[in-house]
Image (cartoon, rainbow, N blue to C red; front, side, top):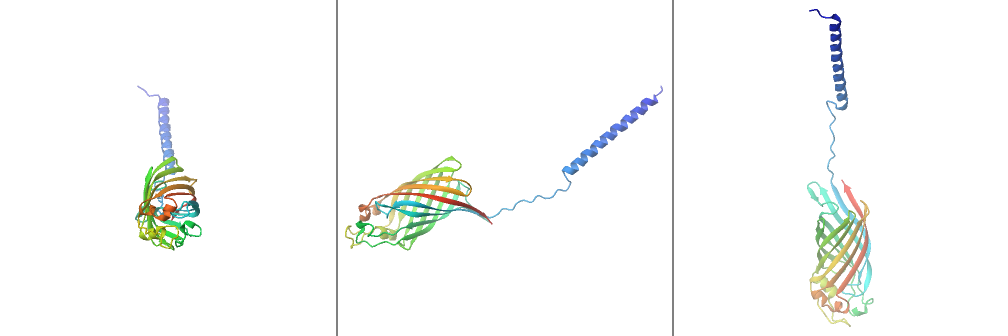
Length: 274
């Protein structure tokens, strides 16, 4: 049997072309992979975790009783200093914008009381303004919060006063929250004596020695609107009813056990990393 030389030549040529085409494709694929994925890649730098502190500063105006136990009203400033979270080394607390543990300074300004402005207090010593400072501890869940705060007075009274409370929280959207819940306040003997005792020199009220204890029970409501990451506003209202030894003071009997208050504040939020 003889072999056709032309057929053998064509077969060899076809085989060589196929092998060459396969090698060319393999080289092209290898070159493309080499460009897309280098054998030695540069290490990716991971950002280091920074220490941070989140807090809020604000100011507003409020209206409430002219003095504790009064039936008259007056305006007063409302300062806000609130620590929301802290990450410093191994120390960390705060659960973000709406949940977690919080610790914050607690301040209150109590205005002066003068018999010249309130004739029912004739013969009772005038009271200097008091500046109260202390701490507020709280924990907030998605739909509830609880807190306790205590303050010490300077300038006027030298006593302790505080409050415990809890709230149910409704969040219609991510920027709006509405909270409402009960309040219970307390004060020691020095605070009670300064604000609620009546000396024998009083001309319109019977002498009275006030003692510390549970001061009032009530309810509070707050509406908060967060405009963006930097600004928010809060509107608050409360009702408290003086109870026990505080309610039986002649000062309260001449005024009112029912104490109302409302305020509106603008808040600046800070998130500092260091």
